[in-house]
Length: 136
Image 1 (cartoon, rainbow, N blue to C red):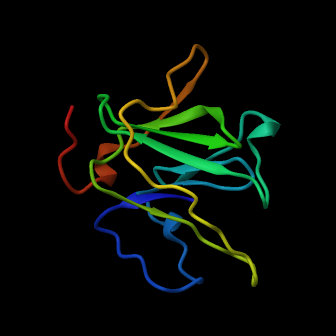
Image 2 (cartoon, rainbow, N blue to C red):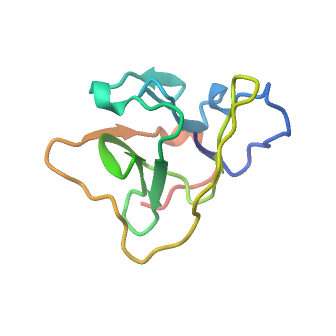
Image 3 (cartoon, helix red, strand yellow):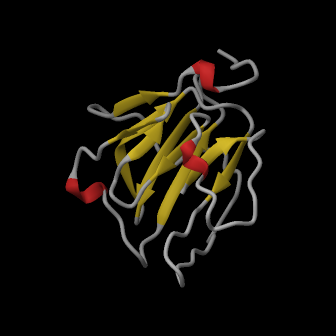
């Protein structure tokens, strides 16, 4: 699951893997986060996820720089990505035949669930991966 720059086309193919682009941020089931063309390995074993778990992504567009936070069953991960573009698309990729996902909610909220906590680890998205100005 993840986000891509809004200008990256998403096609109707299970063979397309959006996270092969540097303009993508993805959260893989092994707990790794793909950003800037590289995987950042999980820092805690509980950051891994599997089927039948709720995976959440939250973008806070009201902070500078904008942030993307990840959740597993409502638990916020310690790693987050900053410098998020203002225009994104959400995606999910199924790898195995028979895999599926369900979007349970997609909404705008006044107050984010995620908050910066002591010990959180920032992964900064490089501005060179975005093809339009980042508001700072």
